[in-house]
Structure formats: structure tokens, C-alpha cells
Amino acid sequence: MEIVQSVILITAAGSPIGKAISLHFASLGAKLALVDIDKVQLNQTYRACKANGAACEASALPNKMKPISKVFLIQFINNWGLSMY
Image (cartoon, rainbow, N blue to C red; front, side):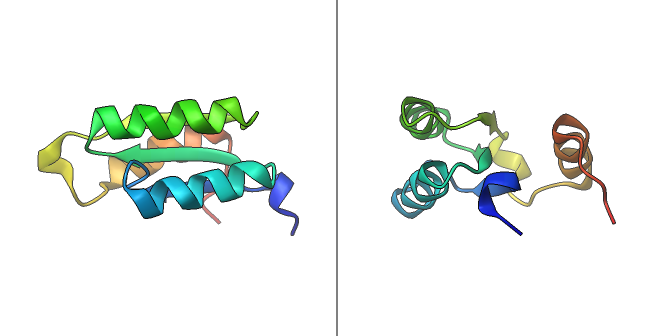
């Protein structure tokens, strides 16, 4: 599998390590789905990845939804046209 053909889901994308991982995969040409509960930091990561030419989406989760829910994962799969199998 080539990274360019991949969709990478990055949780805590606004944290320093999440941002570093996001920028790494953005530089490799992967499509990114960025998730965090901190909207400000998430937006900073999103803008940095877009500036590097990455195809990405950012989703800020409500704080009460710290564990990623099945509903979110289904929405993610549908948005990116992926298969669950």
C-alpha cells in the first residue's frame, strides 16, 4: 500500500505529537482526517497541513465525547468513501 492512496485518521491532532504526525503524513501525500477536542489547536494543525498541500478534514469533538464513538467512525467512513471491511 502506498501512503498517497491512504486516509490517515489522527486523533489528538492539535497536540504537539498529533501535529507532527499530521505534518509528516501530509508531506507524504496522504489524505488526513484530523480529530481533537481543542478547536483552536486542531485548526492550527489543519491550516498547517493545508499549507503543505494535504487533502484533509478536521473534526472537533465535544469534550464529553473523548472516546471516539461508533457514530463518528461511521461518519468518517462515509465521508471518505471507505469500506468497513
